[in-house]
Image (cartoon, rainbow, N blue to C red; front, top):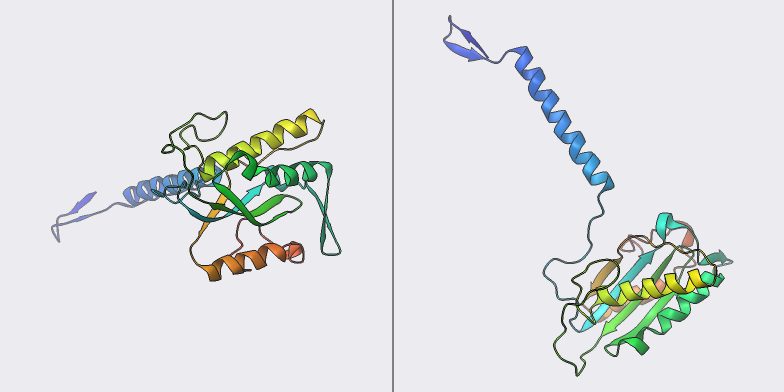
Length: 207
């Protein structure tokens, strides 16, 4: 900072501007680096995911590798791994009495499905430890259900000598109206036809 005695004004020197700019760029690049490699949670903050309601779930494979099969003439052809995942999805209500399955589909590198949670005559859900993911998920919550689904699929495929790696976490959308439910059902049904243009992480443009 330089004092101009003629005007009695303090003027910032070019060196000071250069230092500020350098620090600003360093800060921006640091934030960009952090955001690029940080996996954000998609859960709605403060929401109780054991609540009754319909949830649109998307689960992706690691690096979007097509472990589950391929699309041919608008139809999904399941691989051995895809069959395992498909069958275990259907078994979810057998292990969680508070769940009902709605429309779902196994795609080459992701799963879309609607899970409906209903009331159960059990004690108030408590926090339980699971072997992967969030250690504080409540029992019978969407998080614990999906975590255990992914886990059992991984165990089964590994025991069969098949490859399967999941993307960390999953994507969810709380369905709030019947119209929205019907739009999502249609989107899931049409997923094979939209395979070329489909982004499994952002279905809002196609519903």
